[in-house]
Length: 142
Image (tube, rainbow, N blue to C red; front, side, top):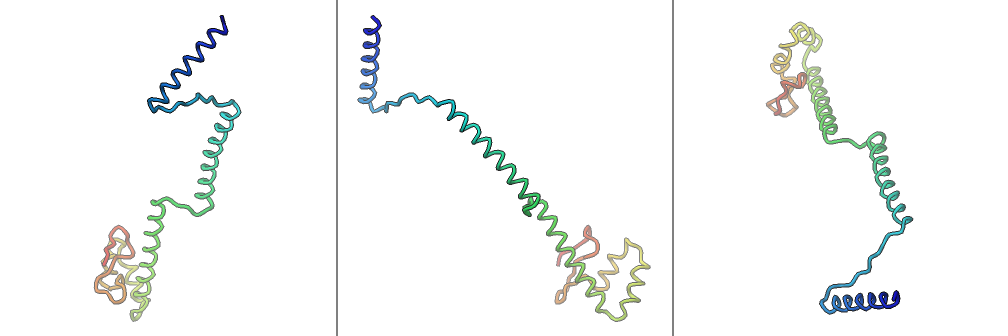
């Protein structure tokens, strides 16, 4: 009886398969994954994740990678440093810079920005308007 049931079951499967082929639905066999394959995929995915994390750590620590916020901060500091250098150069070009430096030191720190603006030391050569290079909170762009 066991043979009969098995044969009937095969004939039913064949009939269903033939019906699916006629209707255009592709017949797919159920593929089960071997435990070894599942383990390889699992460890492979974990390896990719760990590798990506290690690459990011190395890149940010020693590779010179930066975030956009760090890059913007570095850019602002570089611009401020170049503006300060121009400000000092303009200050040193004037006649008798030592006496002017003593006058600047005598003024309170709150009024130094106005003295620098009045002296014209915050102007880029060839421009009529300047920026305030010594106090970033009050800096103006030309």
